[in-house]
Image 1 (cartoon, rainbow over the protein chains, first blue to last red):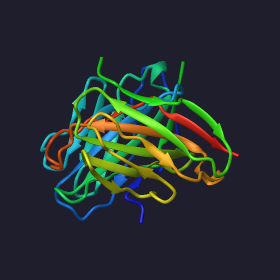
Image 2 (image 1 turned 180 degrees about the vertical axis):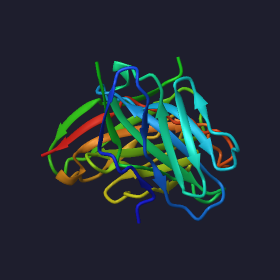
Image 3 (image 1 turned 60 degrees about the horizontal axis):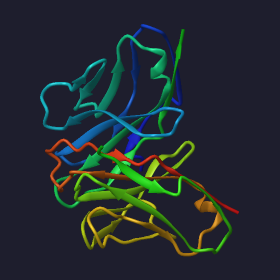
Image 4 (image 1 turned 135 degrees about the horizontal axis):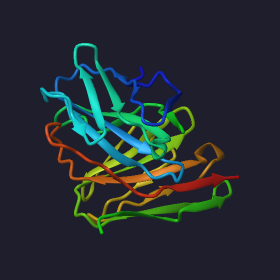
Length: 116
Length: 117
């Protein structure tokens, strides 16, 4: 079964507008971590933001925020004031468990295109 | 500068010819892992290592081997590559120690694009 689902293969947003990239996850663990990574056309993977399952507040990092809805098992990435340089692939990922589940699962990704 | 390095960056080889992709990190991280990225599938974990001499299978370990003899190095070995192993490979490291409570930023290498003919 898919652990991480990103339902939007591609998204478009106008420069300076906000955009939400969807991510839902599947786990029975109580303790887990959620991550978002950006992959520009150059290919490198860039860490954006992290949310722990026990964190009470939504994570924020500059223009990035994570809309964490635990009951719905969703961890959507919100990018405010989009810039042309935000055009990239975005991956949602999850690490489950405490000590015995140490692998990380990634979604299929969403390609974001920012229009001038 | 904190970084993860991979070599080679690009490799074209033929079926059955053993190859090794090296990975090295200079951050003294305990945790290292290998992923492959394929279109529409995102990144899938091949193997990971929690520490020296400790390695475990990820989601797609078939056809791959790894070793962790030193903390900084985590080579990926394809004993007999096949065309279905044509992919983009990433090595990553982090300070992850096995507790989900700590923030675990994975640092990725630049990627190795492998083509097996």
